[in-house]
Length: 347
Image (cartoon, rainbow, N blue to C red; front, top):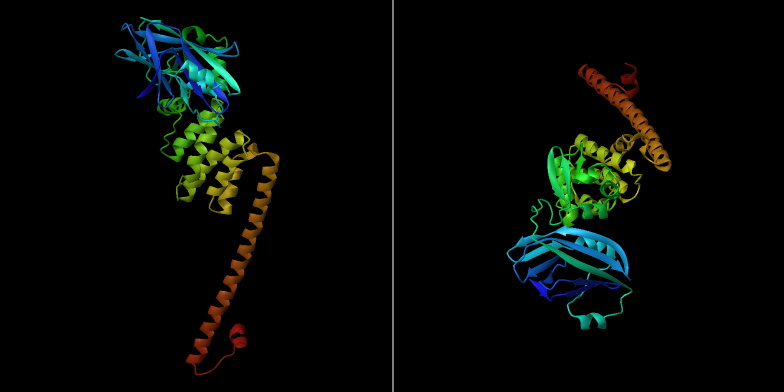
């Protein structure tokens, strides 16, 4: 189901408004209930091949995008939500959908107004994207070519923004190689970013996402994964648990992250010995303050271990003396005599 009204649609949040206008007499358009996609209905059964949009604010062009369409019958659809980070604040959900010019003019109290101008291109066949409905670039991943959204990745990653929009040799071909990644994990990772939904199956799965986020400069992914990790159960076997945490702390150390992420790692250590072993695994990766803290813990752990060893040695000595006394006592009792503790000890 969707809100039906051709030619003009406005989306509003608390402080921002996006005015979407379609300049084509042969097509009506609407928006889905979840505000994620625009739907286009051609009146003459012409096939829409792609859509060109221009985002502006107060007459100044901010960005332009070209998206291919996914078509079923007369209705074509295109994902709109990749543009939202340019327009709406994360803390302000999109509220009302305005579908009349009069209502749009009446609601003029927003701080900022953006315009989105849409132009349609017809009758050019394009392959359907395999990963997302916005298919503008190809990634070669371990000899497998995957269709992805250049716009979505560039919005979320400084790394992809650089390789897609700077002057590299691959730009002319539209095919970029990504090496040393697991193909299935990487496709899942990109798909999760596009859909803004993270279906994490395990702690190792979460770690794969964080490694990609670290490599491809996507710091916001850490905020998405951390809520899952806080409720995740690690392996009960100490060696496996420590091995997993070592991989996480190495990643946190590379990011110089000594906040929530590092706190989660410490909380998952079951003993002081595990905590120190995990911390020592990242070497010089910790900042100086954390390194001093862990050296202090290691020294305290060493002192505690030595104290326990001395106690156990003394306890074993007392236990041996007690056993010797019992043997001597029963030996003398068998002979019909009595023995004092002092005599038993001397014997």
